[in-house]
Amino acid sequence: MAIFDQDAELMDRRDMAQLQLERLQATLHRVYKNVKFYKKKFDEVGFLPEDCQSLEDLARLPFTTRQDLAAGYPYEMFAVPLREVVRIHSSTGSPGAPIVMGYTARDLRNWAKLAARVLTAAGVDRDDVVQVTLSYGLLTSAFGLHYGVELLGASVIPTGPGSTARQVQIMRDYRTTVLVSTPSYAQVLADQMEAQGVDPKSLHLKLALLAGEPWTEGQRREIESRLYLTALDHYALSEAMGPGVAGECEHRRGMHLHEDHFLPEIIDPKSGEPMPAGELGELVLTTITKEAAPLVRFRTGDLCRLLYEPCPCSRTLVRISRIKGRSDAVVIVKGINIFPGRVGQILAAIQGDEPAYQLVIGREGHLDYLEIKIEVREGLFFDKMTKQREFLQQLTRKLAQGIGVQPRVKLVEPHSISREAETSPLVIDLRK
Image (tube, rainbow, N blue to C red; front, side, top):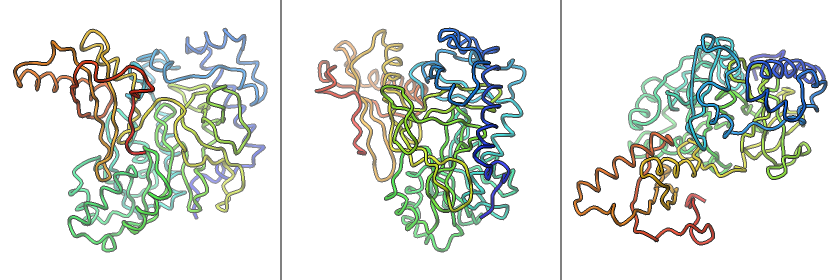
């Protein structure tokens, strides 16, 4: 199995720790000097960057949360002048304003290299044709792996999401060998092939790199048996960079995390205390090479384990297990992180106050849907259907813009949704 960057991916653990410490110290100096948020946080706990003399000293610093990043909208978390930022992405997966991510030219080069590591570990090489069905836009979804494919010298087909029948035609006609998608969309593609009478064995598919939503070993087996390929997991975190943070190799014993760029911790989600290696907890990442928007002890909300046992592929990088769930209220629909409270904020901005509402998430076939039930005051039940339809369209449009997913909006009668969590939970996830 090929290795894209042998110096980094096969590095001795002691050398890795020394490299991490040097890069961590440089990052702490940079954020203390250039980001008001971090200077204030460091000062509150009486910590100066020069106080970091070992990797263990990192635990003395406070966490960074999505709420912190949203509060810094748009550019307050940037550590470089805006003129040095050559790319801007944003995420709707926050409890307030969008989270804005900036990239310098060096950040983009690193992003491409790390994505190339993930692709190479999966078995992609320059002879492959890679079809990327993730979203091209303000989200980071498609871009990292797209850059990595080009860096490897392979061919990339940037189809983006949707138009499933056309996706299948492109796979057949362009001889796609590698599929990049969410797990659920891979299942949708298999459904479409069956509907069109396309035999997956007649295609050239050999690999699928899947991420963006939680998935199980059962789903992996189904996707592999229906599409006749090998399905591998990878970890993408928009706030830290995007796709390329970690990925599985052919042995599928966890996702190799690129520790020379991301310093991982596992904490107890409730107490915030560090947990021993191998224990299930919340993943916390510190970026140690990011220039434009570095993160110190960022709480990802993802539950997993750190695995240090040797991997047969010879990579010495720590691995993270499959993501087991979330430690916060975030729900993932069609690969998009949604804070339920964000829905209430949007509704309050439209109606003047926050009505009672409820999110119902389900799955039709292999496609997720989001239904938002909104309790409407009597005065808003219109006599004319045209007015009610216009109101529903306005709500749907505003919600889609705010959360990144097109919902189904259903108006319900007053007092039909309880505000007590025990009797009427804010989120009903029928997928579980």
